[in-house]
Length: 118
Image: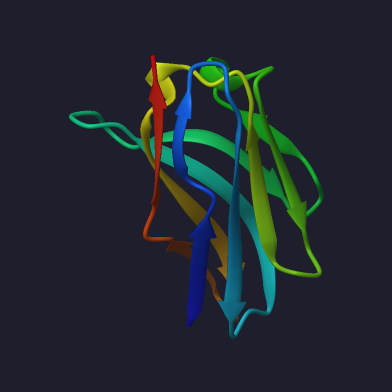
């Protein structure tokens, strides 16, 4: 199976920055998509950003221009650079990977808390 280890969450003031990392390991044939989702208290989980193996990216409108997703295919790692953070960015951030193992499956990390104080 695939294990995802997330890191980089924490407490930051409005306007601050954080960088999240998610490393995938296990019996991975290839990774097709890596991404970040978030879930705030009382809300549904929502997409933040994704990146494909070809480098194509997709962002939620709420984070465009502030967040940048990037990947290191050699390390099976995805990053999320979060700048100009706002209190509404407060949530648990989850890493999601769609990988061939060898059939295509999706895997979720356990989540990392991001709290932005006003």
